[in-house]
Image (cartoon, rainbow, N blue to C red; front, top):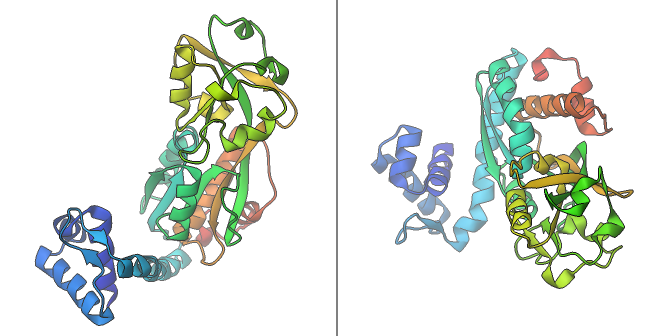
Length: 322
């Protein structure tokens, strides 16, 4: 079995068809088709459903895909490791992220990294916590940036805490509580509370906020968990309730009719962390990204957290991606 067969198979799936894969890999469409056919013949199984567009995975394709990605990733990492010994870092870092981290951390960080490492390219895949965990498991992403909340325990993941994100209350600008510098937790009693959460898991109260809100009697029947902090802001603006989100996503809100105030309560915060798989080594480009991510968040938020990411930051070898 040839590595090029796996690359063609992955490209067809990820890019949505044989023509797009051919264009991306600079091969003819007939060659891409031949690669996938050779791979299926070698395995004795059909991997793609070709009667739909874009092609979808068969059961055999589902089983084979993470291993195909693993093989191509390991080869790319092997080549990059040799190049890194010369101080020449290259490759693609696939990053999974929640939107608030993308806009407030990745945007300035990737701008700087693109200048420092011009041969490194970046992919950003956004999604909720559970999707990011699946993407990390199946090698769709190399590093996932999300709140440190366990949707399902993943002992094979390593993590580095990056920052503490305190909760803020989102209020109509003309609300009585908006006149205060901060809001006490008890002042949320009786209100419908709008939080960010994950579709299908947190219909009423987002998992990150549940423990804090259990301490007060909110109007749970009219509370809602939505995906985006901008949706929380819009719902607050039209009077559906008061919002409770992290301070980091609150930076994304620019509605003049809506303001946010710190929630005054011990433990009313969440931690944002970088996650990666213990079962495989980070690529040189991925290591450089994680190192600079830790450096950036430490500088931006002024707090240093112990962990494997800090060990990477303290390495002095120039070839390791500093």
